[in-house]
Image 1: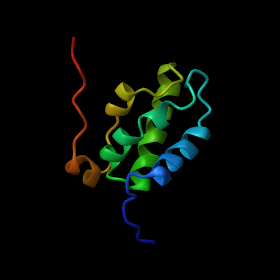
Image 2: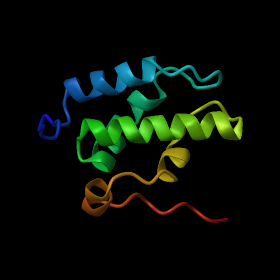
Image 3: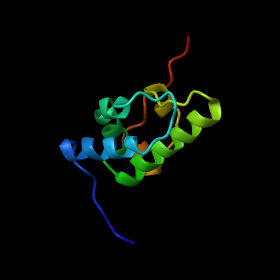
Image 4: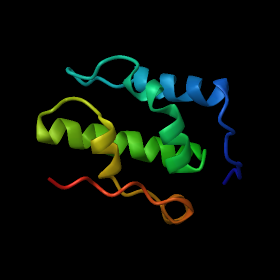
Length: 97
């Protein structure tokens, strides 16, 4: 096991998000969508790469299964991630109509 610390919110974090986003093969996902959400993703995951990877992977799987083929902030909010990230700052609750 390799112990790592959280990334700070810098250009390096945004590059990491961009790299993960570039691996997505979702048919309706506009390029740059996750990069625009870099700050939210950092706050949500506490800057931890494992939490970020899990969040994006789970959102992508959900997007394929529901047929939307895209990741949105709303879909990201619906994904539960590890206890440490969730306890540091829970996501905004989904909006109800």
